[in-house]
Length: 150
Image 1: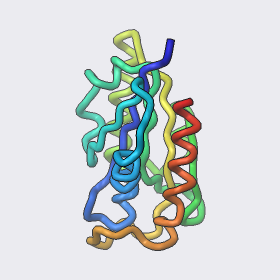
Image 2 (image 1 turned 135 degrees about the vertical axis):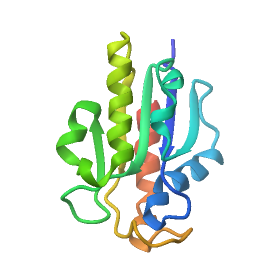
Image 3 (image 1 turned 180 degrees about the horizontal axis):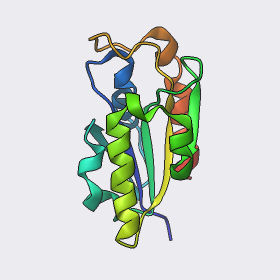
Image 4 (image 1 turned 45 degrees about the vertical axis):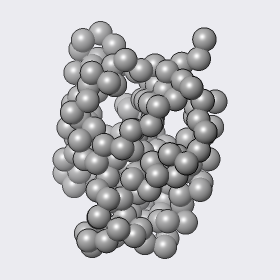
C-alpha cells in the first residue's frame, strides 16, 4: 500500500527568496505526480492545517531556512533535527509549525515529516522573482522531493 504523502510548500509569493516554496509548488503543479501524493501551497500558514497534516503518512515541507550556512545551501532535515539547523528567532512561522507538529504528536499521531529547502540570499526585498542563485536550486530540490515520494 502506498503512503499518503503531502508536499507542503511554504513562503510568500512576493518576498524574493521567501517565495522558494511557492515556486517549487508551481513547478510540481505542472507535473504528473502519483495518486497518493498531494501538493498544497500555504504561504506562511502551514501551522493552520493540523487536520490535514494528521491524515497523512508523510509530509514534506518545502521552504527557506535561515541557517548558519551559505546562501543557496540545500538542506534536508527530519523534524527532530530542525531546531538545531534553523534560527527560530528569525522564523516565527516555522516555530508555529513545529508547535503544530508537536500538538499532532500529543494527540497520538504525527506523520513522518521531512523538511527540504534552501538558505535564502534575499528574504527582505519585495519581488516575485527568486534571486538567480536560489532559482538555480529549484531543479535539485524538486529532484530531492521526487526521490522522497518514491
